[in-house]
Length: 266
Image (cartoon, rainbow, N blue to C red):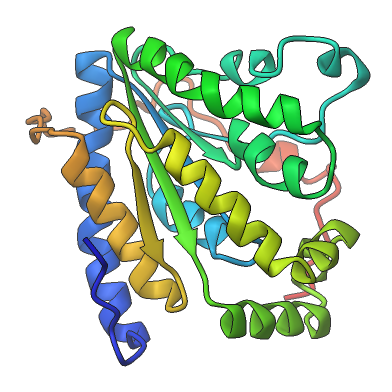
């Protein structure tokens, strides 16, 4: 079923209001995952500048990194290249009480590796054949697997690339690989369609997210995650701060006078 595309971008005030509600839900989900010893994987895939990083930040900024763990693996080392392709990803799979968020994943083989020629056609074909089987094994072992593809339009991607070029705070996001991918839009479109066709399964379905409006995309992603993992609010015992003890009292600031502080420039 196609997603309904909003005609207007969401205003910041409305976005922040809804985001806070959803982030409260994530805090409740976090306690549920810990209490029930659940194992969750959330995969973020999409073209460059599709909004994966911002969505992950919105998802994780109010929760514990001990529960919500982000995994963004660099290019494989020579040793890792000699291992089974999925080995370095499986090493990052969650233990009980963890949600692992993959900022790009093993689906690199179906995207950048295939398009840029970093794997052979035979390796690509074998990945598409075996990937659903590996994911079935993971799901059967009790892992909740959520796969998200952020779909950004051609014009919006171009605007975001141009904005990064001019912004010193975001220039680090651009690499020669990104600019190369910019020129191969249709190659990536074909690779995407092959990937979705081969790996959109009943046990591990893909969910697409329109991400031209970053704010709406982030809200829809968090809502989907909360909807996909049934949870209940766990009542927590109200914490009361005990009265500070004066036993052993001394002036604990005097001892700091001989130390050097960071210069107060602000």
